[in-house]
Image (cartoon, rainbow, N blue to C red; front, side):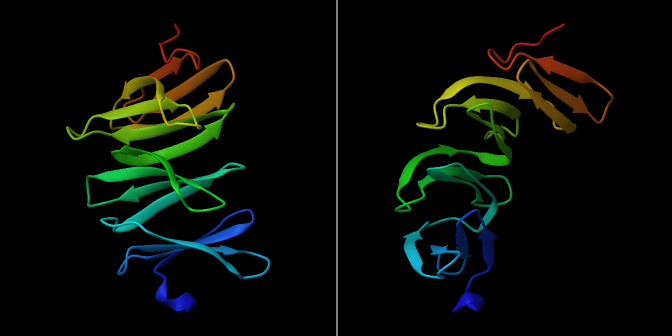
Length: 162
């Protein structure tokens, strides 16, 4: 049965297995191997990455080369707690918040700070497509670009610090 899944993600206590042909996501307990839940996610061709906290899995999903969906699933049941349309290229849990780099329908890139409980944007900051390095600290977010340009943002507001 394991071979039917095109992608597997081993997490802290569970393993997520995705069958892109059937659009099915299976969550399996790591220690026992017991199936915990199964979920149909139509329209998703690929799961780029998975991040987790104590209660949720966060999935960056692709629907095609330029579109996607970011899902927050309850660990216990697989229920979708919230979602954000758009393609996520990066996500990190930091200082109690979720930070995501997204591209919108116009191929513009944004760094979004979101509330983990409901996915609501706290702030967003447009970033250039040559972003190549980032660093998160409680007092600043550093963004470095391939062009040599850099930006320092306030984690509270997303506004540039000079």
